[in-house]
Image (tube, rainbow, N blue to C red; front, side):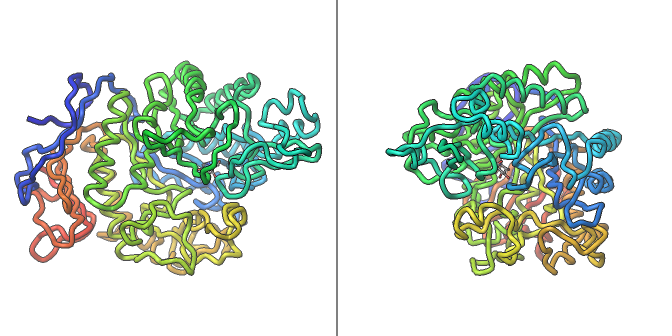
Length: 581
Ligand code: NOJ
């Protein structure tokens, strides 16, 4: 007898896949055929355990000023769209003063707003306007590195070797007779060496761009400073922080060579050593201290880890009860579009987070990966994380991509836990895969010697109105990345109120998800074959058909579907249905 994934059980029972499935198990819908290992931990409660959180990339969301770069007043003016869509919270990528060497992930001042995006008063107004609409606000915190323009880094350059100012960063003498070789062989995530030499001959570490020097988290001043930055934004009323590169703050003390190519994913097989720059045990104490600080504030403020850590059990350590609240589930984002792969990743994710009492999170797109409407249009088996797509690369099949993206989204939004959406995915927006190379801004493109296209293709300003300048992104034609002509087809005003549009599909799904409490529900597998996945959450049965042939839907009332059923009422390929039973 198997039992559903349900929070609060204490008895352990290993997950099992049925040896043999009935030919059409979803027809016998209510016989659970597989279950999850039950957890030992007390499950967390709170708004965030089931929230749908919408990522805003400020420079590409809405431009109020007409300079081609989105801004905070632009976001505030569009908040009603998010209310209508039906999300619970927004997460804002960085808007702080920055030379923009990495689109704002190079922060020069953690307590202000870059004039590109507005003023501190605009941030206060955005937070207040969001609150007035019952939308929570999460801001980005970038603690692994500052900008090289940060006053601390400038002071470190001026103060010289051995100074307290250099202690805040990772400065070292070079190797070789005259110190002309970098201190170790680490590569930057964006390509090229992870070290840059300064005028007096020392080198500083930057796991990302040279404009993003890594901080030294063994320095008490660094720790104190970030506690203060947290307080600064908590006092202004934010509901939480998305913590950038949360797995990178502590480096192995000996900075040992790592002969492997650099990857932000710490991805360790059991037998492989952990890279010396990622997922070191020392990071957890930092988050425990932050958690104590947040717990002292009213209103359930949260920490979300951006930690590219595998396997799921290792990632779950970031969301133990006294650490962060959530961690992005990138293993899910990277999983292939096949029934066995989706079954495996969903099961593993639930088990790993259940074991520590945290909610699982689900995410399909963000500002660092190829948008899922395009990613899923590449042949199954393509590298899960292509670093951008250029005009001479294999092009995704747009129709297949969108069909699968819609099916994947409906599958995701029925899963228990919290889900993240990335601006524009509610429009079915594809990646801009033919962006002219001269327009590219992601440092990856230059740093990789033009071998990696980078992430600009998912960051193009989004379309609101088909026939307006810059497709309604702003009052003028200006757009910091060129928008392709197909944007008109995806514009919000073409989809709003149009039955079957991607926007209306999202809206209905979010409404049903909230109404039926799917985020706080339980998952019971009903079918996990090679072609079909089906599960039950409350009185909803969700079925996704990955196979070529159409399959009959589960018996019951069809509530929602990612695409039309065929003439015989069957569920075609790459389609998800929600059926009330
Ligand atoms: C992760 C962010 O999402 C990405 O955009 C950025 O380039 C790196 N961290 C470095 O801050």
